[in-house]
Length: 510
Image (tube, rainbow, N blue to C red; front, side):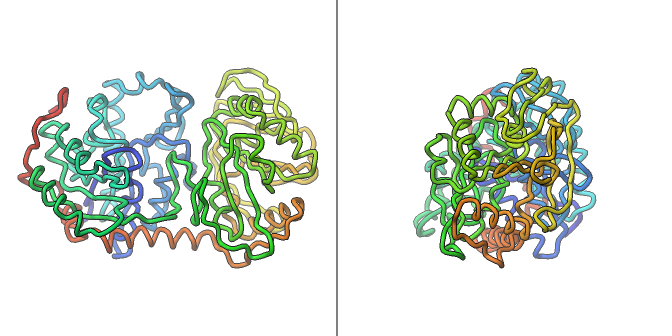
């Protein structure tokens, strides 16, 4: 393969499977010995990651980099939008926050020109150093209201000369109409880049689908280059959806049998603007640990551990906890000696007070008062990859926060740059539970406090489980896609002679 091949994976809708297909192609190519990198020009997500150089990118791109067996970098996700409300987001450019912006302000044509130059420069740099770059689109390329300012779907494909494969989720129904409609809504020049389709989440006999695939090719002139089966429990990092674990999902977990006599129940408060809820994936991967997201106080009754996760709105989360009655329920738990863990924004909420003139601009707000911490929000965001030791075990994590925690006194013991008081633990470190020895030590403490005969399995290796899942994604592509056709697209670029599917997009752009 010549250096710098590329492909853009778009979708008929959000959550059609773009991230899965992109990661699967990356792992398949990496297993072939090729140097491959993922790329997403613009990502909107509250789940993010910190690279070694201290840049913030979407967790989905970090996962795809792991699939490609390369170190994640800011080049792979040059624009990250972190929603703070329905109408505004923090803009993270090349890994660093550059300010809050309204949706209308962000989608201006002047801003689009500057951002398109930035993202194409990043993509060019990746193509210069890799055999292939597999790009992921966002939402749908047929969002014609946003086409003029698009930098992540057909705007990127045309600027960089990329062929586009469109993924459709057949489990939702209407996949043929979605493929046809997505193509027909595009302008003639945009349609020239739509090269093929991939059906995702198919259940049943593929032979029953084949007549529809033939009709779709007759109607559009484009082949379907993959029919991927419905695969349970893929456990990949999500941009937005509440999915957890390598073993199950939010409300219907498939839990491995416990290693000891009891299971351990973990309740995660589904706070507003929840971020990096992937922190609990490592808990859900443990045999005998049941993880669920909750929003009512009665759902805490049988929980052995309550987790307050990260959030992009600590003050808003506090208000929500109080309004829902969860704040009082958590305080009662602490008084009864039942474990609570706060991570990042959740840690801040457990403190005595929060001074916030940055995120909510609410001034000084009273916290839950369960940890001896006062938090002051700073304009500069902390982005770090700390390592250390806790509970006698080595730990690694990453930090993404504006809040600076001041310990008013030391608590019962230090805990990952945070503290513990009785059954209440708090830390700014995301990802710490992925450290196997530390996770087991922490769960032993939780089980002891909860009075459960739970024993962590001695051989659960979270990193190995993640690798198995990434290999499953590679298998999906290798076993159920036309890999020869994908290779031709990656190497040769946009095919010649693709027909125009009328009618063109009203308001489309050539």
